[in-house]
Image 1 (tube, rainbow, N blue to C red):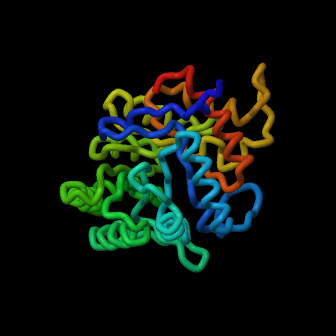
Image 2: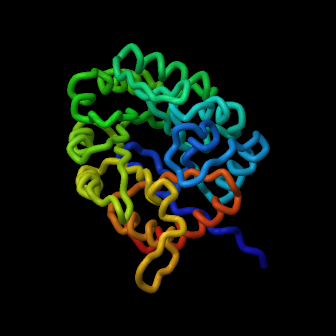
Length: 275
């Protein structure tokens, strides 16, 4: 008798009412290969390859996709290639633009409104599940002085977005963001542990937590690890999932083998630990 393939566990995204797979697909690599910090260069995948990756994600029970205007053509390509939109939790961002090989930032209410309207068109949807402010590192100043959160609150009230948060770069910014938003995205891996404080506070407040750079932008792959577990990817993921409150880990994949290995490692690493 055949059995259905195992599905990635889902966890609550804080108190948003949404549940997300504990692994989400990062999509910078489908739209941009300039100005990235990965250890090796790469070519952008063609449409057939992206469709294949999305199908593998769906079959594994992955429902979370992370994109951004700063990820080159990522939003537009997802809008063209993503099927069954309502089966997915789409996370995009505001604040950062990437043109001619360089990033620029604008957190003004006018720019945030224009960015949201553009993302809706590019993604071919009438609502965005989650929108994060794409910080330039000045987290506290953005939160206190830009007015971007007020703009996102109004967009949420209007039904254009279901939840909002911030992709932060400082501990103080992450903690401050938790006072105003539904979700934070923070860096956490065995080499970068400062944001564990933010994860713990988010758990106490029942806020959603997305993890970026869990594999140290790909540098964990091939690194040595100590102890019985010799797989650095699994070791990094087990470290991340050992922190209560983590909703999902965002990892980019553009090859089926890499994606399948990540899914297998996540299934092995995530299940013993609390969400």
